[in-house]
Image 1 (cartoon, rainbow, N blue to C red):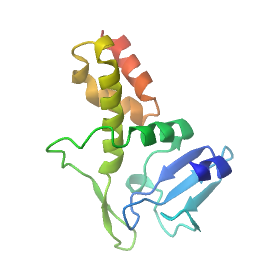
Image 2: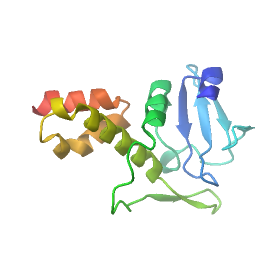
Image 3: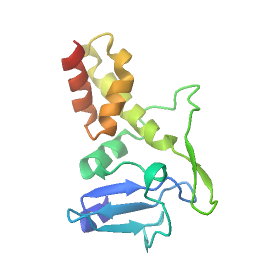
Image 4: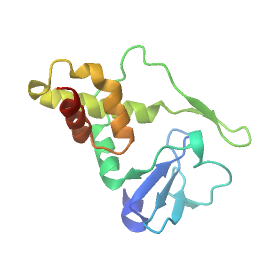
Length: 152
């Protein structure tokens, strides 16, 4: 978030980083990007780190704040093993892309837990749709609201 405050209002994470933390690029409103390694040092990408399945979607500052506040709110569901694995250009380290899915799940659960009384009893049938709306940039609150409005 510090780098976003200094260099741009959007961020994208590479899924082919070495180590537990991803590298990322911060983008400003002019489309200029500055990449940082997992230690938050400026670096020059040398390949497809931020292209296609090797990178996440672009996130706004509000989405990053929401993801950070949701981390650790729920544990990983039992049996959640389906992870997408990608290879770095040049045969680098294999890594998991499930971390982002876990963040969405944590945000969904926390919102559900805090608003259970006001949500329809069958809202859990629409978990995938809520997640897709969140991936498109909607906040967890807006995603739940859109599904409730559409189906209930």
